[in-house]
Every structure is written in C-alpha cells, then in structure tokens.
Length: 174
Image (cartoon, rainbow, N blue to C red; front, side, top):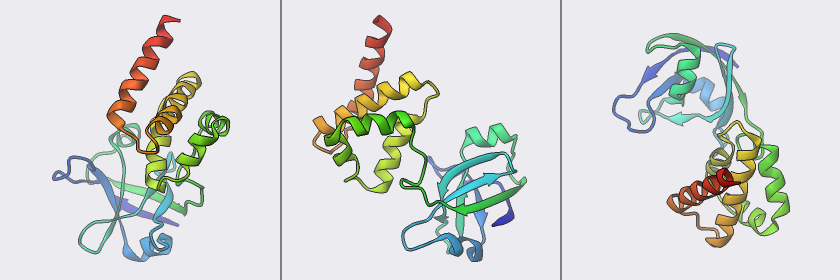
C-alpha cells in the first residue's frame, strides 16, 4: 500500500515525538485484532518494522524516530511517500543471527524469552541488536540471556544495563 502523509511532531510527548498520520481506511487494512505490526518504507529509502498506533482521537499514526528523520533530511510538515506491508515476522522485527544462536544454545533462556509478550521480546531484541558489531551483539545476547534466567523471567533493566557495562569493561581488559 502506497500513500503520502505529512511529517509531524508531538511536542506534548516525552517519548514519541515524530510521526505521520495514517488514514483510517488504510490503517484498518493492516490491523488484525491486537496485531498492528507493519513494515514501513519512507521515501523509498528507510525501511523499518513498526506499529500503527491510535492517536487518541480515533485516527492513526506511525512513529518515525529522530535518527530516521535526520537520515532522510526530513522537517516538520514535509510530505513523505510511505509504503506499508503487513509484518508477518515472528517477533514484529528482525532478530540477529547472533541472538538466535545464543538463545539456541541456552534452552532455559529460550523458554523464558518465548514466554514473554511480543512487546517485551521486541524490547530485548532491540537491546541486543541495536549495535553494529557482531562481537558486541553476542556479548549483549549472552548477558541478556543469563540475566533473564538469573532473574527468573523478570528482567530488571537497570541491573541489565549494569551487567552489560561490567561485561564491556571485562572485554576491554582482555
């Protein structure tokens, strides 16, 4: 599905700033119960997994982070070309080979990970995979899987961040 929209900014939100509206007729073609996941391509250049959100007034919107706006050179009010397709991926985003391999090697962590909601799974995938280096992805995956096992499936994100900092320091000493 291809359409045009205008980039906007929500100055009242501390979390979600940049977005573009999606007409209800378009949004409803992609919403299946609670599944609102889509793959979005903006201006034929930036493709990413995301969700169609309600805007609180009966309309819909898709978020576009600052990094993507900057990469595309977008400014508020600019018309953008959007392509949407239904996201049929297992997690609603891609999972790196590194994380998949670490989960495969740790059955307890794999079981716990797959007991989480899709949203929590995406949070952890993003946390592990939001770096370029394969070595760091592996380190993060190991720290995260050990953490969820040690925490009995109740992640403590502050502690998780402290654990990755310690792992990074240990890696520098090698």
